[in-house]
Length: 101
Length: 167
View 1 (spheres, each protein chain N blue to C red):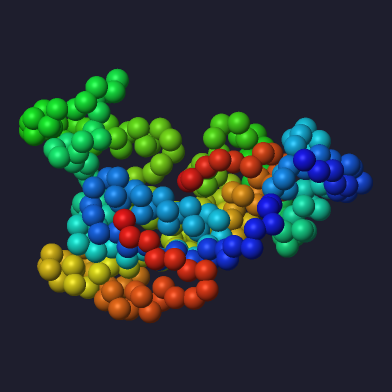
View 2 (cartoon, each protein chain N blue to C red):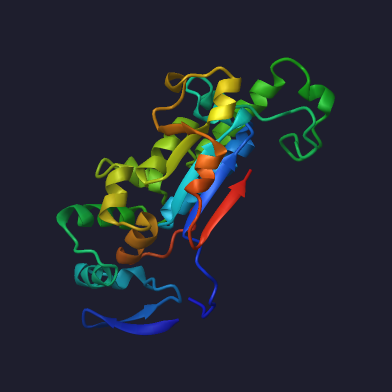
């Protein structure tokens, strides 16, 4: 576990770069993490992040996000290229999902 | 992340030659898992694996209840092969397996192919097997990019960090 200052807040970060405490998250932190991933967050991104945070404990899958009514799976890949579930959960400040789908 | 210097897997070329639920899903989960991690994935369906991309068969795959020593009854007792041979048992067990997977948010085959291709995964059918089973392009899922030879598939399976996987 390491500490890192993101958007002026000192945060505990897990070994693979996820926020240790999801309650410390805010939109500014999300923007900073997204920038590190090469993503400029839009309203659409934030809608997805909201869904992800609300469903963080229900076994998130790409399929579930695809059925959220916010984006389809293709759209999810387009918003968070190179690993949508992995990257979006990191930006959403929740723990890394252990999901194969 | 650790300091290991292993070459990252960047691409998987998966060959699926069998048509049981478990063989097909092994291939689909591996392909989907690859695109989810930002890797390239290509899947080549051949012989009975073609059932997984044949429109009228893909969502009706079975698991073998005869000759499958790992098969268990609900509760864990061994599943007698003679029971597995009774009419309807294989269909019932297969339906049960599919519903168990649905509970884990693992989709039916057609939707799984939607997911894999939405992530950039590519689906191919084996020419030899398609000819042998007398199938036509229109019998196959619309996600099938092309019907190709194994040589064609090898030709696109190369590159640093690529792996060929046979299920």
